Image 1: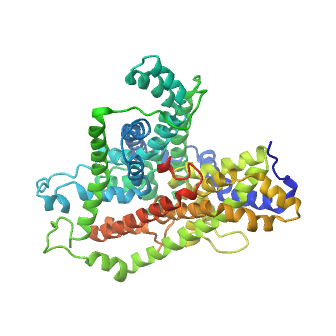
Image 2 (image 1 turned 135 degrees about the horizontal axis):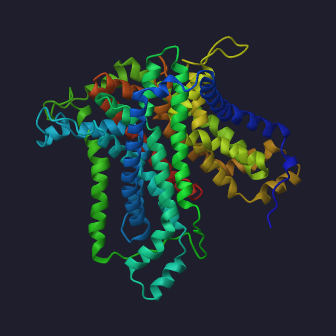
Image 3 (image 1 turned 180 degrees about the vertical axis):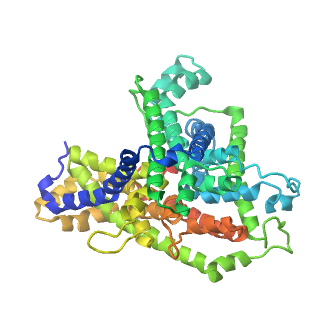
Length: 563
């Protein structure tokens, strides 16, 4: 039996430091949010914002778009999970990589790309000669349009959750059914799908919760049509700042958190009373030969990717190469002016590039250090305190970003005690919010790598008199280097394109790329917004390709598209 290093081989300050930092990043801001909401309620009853018709209209819009989007996510995610996990189709890894791209892209870019792809003024449709007549309404500026794009954006979440469930199905159970004469369709219906149900329910729940907190898609598609959801209502309340603003923000944020909690409770209710434990050899899903159906299934999957990924991106590129929205792309109209404008002449976009690079790099490196220390403690200490730490790390990532942003606004709006200045309106409040929000993302690859290290290596060094610093430098760091690289790239990838948190926390001079794209589109500069979006998408694909290169050195499960 392996023996872990003694807890007393760790300096006492390590646990205290990690615990304090996690409390400051998670428990303190969320506690401040809960206090603000409850204090306002006890002081004057229900906050006035909860009695307004517009709030409950936004509440209904949030529920309807999130529920409808969840169904779209389930349909797409389940189909791709079943096809790539259980069938003998070709190029599964490439299909999974491409299907993950919508989730890795900022939601405002997804919305902008689809707007550029549809409607009477689409440069791509005009170039192809299939644009609807002028005056035709933009179909995406609707509840259905928002729900559709929420479904596309979050379908990879269902894909990942169901793929994990399918991977856990014992192969010998399926083989026994086949040897008993059961047809593949019956094996799928009576064995595979029931055992994959927990993953499907979990994925649907995550897609619903993600839809509730999504800001970018409802902002791009809903605000022009006066369709507000709770995240965009919070944004509009902050923009029209007043004496009741902080109380309103706290109340609306707690309402969103309650919806998310209810969604997770429904998931638990759906799974309660059912036992999904299996006994047998798992880890490699059974494969069903499609025979003559393989080519049509492959064509159908690639067609879906063409519609949800390739066509919107092509529309985005076309829009970035024309002088104005609605102009068809021809040899006479094609121009790189928008790229030169955003890269060299627009001070706002240049600042946004610098801010996003600084925030993403600083958050990635800072969280790497914190993840190292936390993962080490999680493996070498046991008990309720460590379980509590893990929960505190997961909560900010699970909550809608808009709720987390409001929590930090409430925490840092007033001057810091004893220092006399406020972090609100500075780039530092965005950085702290990023550290809180993406901690769980950074921790996963590091913790997975730590779990694969033989504890005997460190134990031998400890018995030889090596201190913690020496053991980290000579043993753990070299082994952990690939996982550390993956952690940094993952956090940089997500943070560099983030919008929901920074949309509420930015001020003049602290714009991020996500905010810059949103503001450019909102001001009518669709060509500049498209050009900036194309560059961001290119950066995302490059970073994901870098992770693919590192994949052979990483623990299993760190890169979801390589399951």
